[in-house]
Every structure is written in C-alpha cells, then in structure tokens.
Length: 255
Ligand code: HEM
Ligand code: HEM
Image: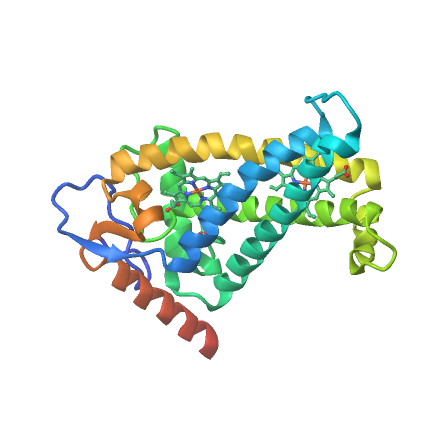
C-alpha cells in the first residue's frame, strides 16, 4: 500500500492477487434492510404507479364490484409509507451510523476519497488498468447513490403533494399541498413523479451492471455483501480508513 500526500492511505488496486484478505463486516443491518425494503417498495410502487398513470386493465362491470384502480392506489399508498420510512431512516443513519454507512461515504469530502473518485472514473474510461478498492462504497458509486437519494426525496415530495389533492379535509395530509407549488403545479408534479420513476429504473440497470463488474474485478464479494454484510478486503484496509477518517475529523475540530 502506498501512502498519499497526507497520512491517508491510497486505495490499493482492486485485483491485487497478492493482497492478504480478511472477511470484514461492512454493511450493518440498517444499511441492508433499508436497501432491500427500498428495492421491494420501488418494484411495487412502479407496477402500481404505471397502472395509475395508464390503467391497462379494463374490467367489465361496476367499479365497486372489482375496484381495480382503488386497489392499485391503496397498495401504492401503503407501500409509499414503507418507502418513505426506509428512506428517512437510512438518511438519519448516515449521521449516526458506523463508518461505512456515513454521509461522507456519499459526498467525497476527504482527500483520499476524492483521489479514489478520480481513479475510479479513469478506470471506467479505460485510462487506468485497475480500479481502486475501498472498504465501503466506491466513491463514484457513493456520489451516484447521493443522487439516487435525492431522487427518492423528489418521489416522496411529489407523491405527498399529489396525495394532498384527494386527501379528506380533516386529514393532516392536506398540509402537503404546498409541495405542488414547489414543483410547478399539480400537472408538473405528476409529470416529475412519473419521469423520475424511469430515472430510477435506468439507474437500476446500470447499478446491476456495475455491481456485477465490481464483483468480478474486486473479488471482494460485492454482490454477496448487500445480503450478508461481509466483504473480502485487503487485510487492515477498513481499520486504516476508519483511523484516517477519525484523524481528519479531529484535525477539523482543532482548526
Ligand atoms: C420510487 C417510488 C415511487 C414510484 C416509482 C411511483 C410511481 C408512480 C407513478 C408512475 C404514478 C402515476 C403518475 C402518472 O403517470 O400520472 C404515481 C402516482 C401517484 N403516486 Fe407514486 N410513486 C412512488 C412513490 C410515491 C410516494 C412516496 C407517494 C407518497 C404518498 C406516492 C403517491 C402517489 C400519488 C398520490 C399518485 C397519484 C395518484 C392519483 O392520480 O390519484 N408515490 N406514482
Ligand atoms: C430499484 C432497485 C435498486 C436501487 C434503487 C438500489 C440502490 C442502491 C443504493 C442507494 C445503494 C447504497 C446503499 C446504502 O448505503 O444505503 C445500493 C447498494 C448496493 N446495491 Fe442496490 N439498489 C437496487 C437494487 C439492487 C439489486 C437488485 C442488487 C443485487 C442483487 C443490488 C446490489 C447492491 C449492492 C451489491 C450494493 C453495495 C455496493 C457498493 O458497495 O456500492 N441493488 N443500492
């Protein structure tokens, strides 16, 4: 491992076969359970949402006898509660959770992470033969996830705004009406709510591609890690990163 300008270690190459590896616990229960709750709720919200926007099932008979649209909406709204709680819990966890779950794994404020960000970008553009390996999210993926969390918040805000349109007068949900104005009116909010769904689906396609790619090149078990929480990392890497992050925070406090 070479040392960068500061006392922060530069990320070693991902496919360094000579590195001695250890099996480390990286993703805690909150990270894993919110990831899977969010994934499952997006699947249900997309299927029911596409139906709400384009009711492709036309059922004969009186609506009150089959109630297809009503059922789709109820499922959409209950799943929206799961989605919203999972997203908000994960965001809170970014500030109180352990090192790999923290907000600075998403926004590359530390020098070492910015360096690894540039190195990963170079790797994607065939300008560097090896991707750097870090214990948590690779910094490029981390920043992409920060964008994805913003998209989640847009879905929640436009969804709550749209809900207020039909909420009962006595319901506290009517207080979210102001959100429609924030997004340029009811019709624009609906359009954004619909379009962002496709952005999330597009992200998902790329997400799977890079998870498979990084599993193959890092050989750290990236895909398995989001199930088990563990990765095969070069020995000592996670502890070095934790110590460097701690020292950087201490330095900031004294400056
Ligand atoms: C990733 C998460 C979500 C996805 C993919 C999604 C998808 C969709 C889609 C595609 C529509 C139809 C829009 C159209 O084409 O007209 C829709 C409608 C709607 N969604 Fe979502 N949604 C999500 C999250 C939420 C959340 C968190 C809420 C919060 C309550 C919500 C509430 C609504 C409401 C109120 C409508 C309009 C229903 C109506 O027309 O009566 N959605 N959703
Ligand atoms: C709608 C679909 C999905 C979305 C929006 C999504 C989004 C995300 C986000 C935001 C993270 C960061 C997690 C955190 O720190 O809280 C993440 C991590 C991860 N996801 Fe997904 N995910 C989806 C589906 C999947 C699926 C189906 C798999 C694989 C089978 C998967 C594999 C992973 C892995 C391996 C990580 C950790 C990788 C890393 O270190 O960066 N994801 N995903």
